[in-house]
Each structure stands twice: as structure tokens, then as C-alpha cells.
Figure (cartoon, rainbow, N blue to C red):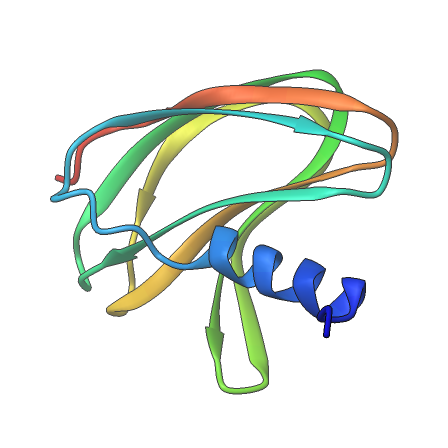
Length: 117
């Protein structure tokens, strides 16, 4: 029996959003987004630690950095309809943080998360 397509899609999305243990090293990323699609780069940051980030998109996207606490989602950073972003994010609490892009139209997003500091 085949699993329903929706269940497979939800599992695939959950796998993409799982925090990565990159050992605190820098990493590059690239995502091709269809209209309405999202991409996330997630990692665990201890309180007081920071990451630099830089990204660019071929079309405007909504960008945020967020974390989940049960049903509550907190957005320390939010910027809508941007083609690029750059900064340093410092964790106020030990959490699994996600850098997330949402496309209104098709867009390619690429960039780099710097090493943990």
C-alpha cells in the first residue's frame, strides 16, 4: 500500500527543517523555491552564541529567524519582501533556530551561515 502523497510531503518538509549539527562550522546553502514554497536552514545555538549570515535571492522573499516552544513560534528577526540579507544573530536562549525564506513567486536563494562564535 502506498503512503498518501500528503503524508510523504509532510515528512519530507519535517526532515528539511530538522536542526543540523554542523559542529559550529560555516556552511553554504542554496534553495530553488516555487511560488509559495519555503526553505529553512536550522541549527541549535546555545544562549549567548552567535552566527553571521548572508543571503541573496533572485526575487523578493519573506525572511525570518525563528524558534518553536511547543505551539508558540518566536521570531527574533523578520523582514518581508527582501532580495538580500546580512547580519549577525545572537541567541538569547538555547534553542533550535531556523533561518527561513518564503517565496511569493519563484526564487533562488543562496547564502552562507558563518561559524558559531
